[in-house]
Image (tube, rainbow, N blue to C red; front, side, top):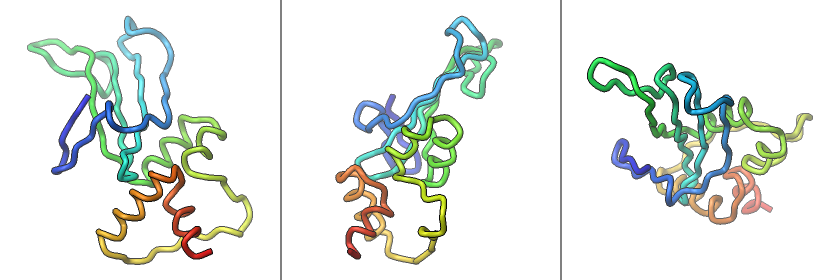
Length: 140
């Protein structure tokens, strides 16, 4: 599926699927859902979801509801929250890096130009690592 949202292209054929989840069942179940988390070459995340007529992916056709699908752009934190909820620990760490349970890692917020942020995302995605890991590699 390919969709343009807010002037950006989201294409399941070109992005890398990094995690998937299904609520089980078959497509005969009205509440069947499948979701796949994708990462674009730029490092951006998006979710592609499909579901039956009784799900949030349903589409109205005339006077009835049918199965449907949708693409939703996700921020890094939204993708991380989705992965925490739907993937196992190994899959999560493969996408977002090892989770430190002690205080050896801290979350910080800095303001940089949009161009620099895109460069960080792109280069991190090319290296197959998180943006945090990429920035840390530059400092070391």
